[in-house]
Image (cartoon, rainbow, N blue to C red; front, top):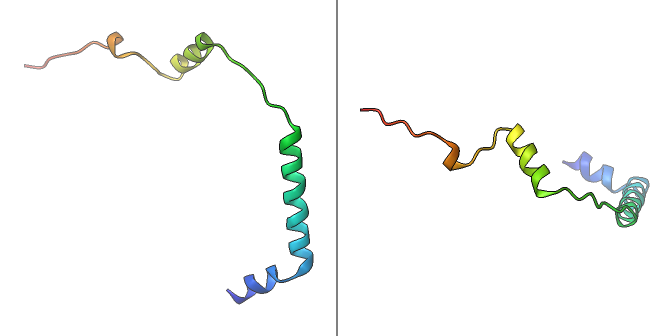
Length: 63
């Protein structure tokens, strides 16, 4: 545990982490993510992954 605390007490490490955080947040705010997908495309992708509605299932009664 002391090695970890000693590692993070080094100013170069903290300076690098700080610069990385600032750059990451800056790029996150600049990047625009606006991909819209229609409801029918969402349903089609979900059905390809195995989605089904409850009224499409057959119920079997075992006696």
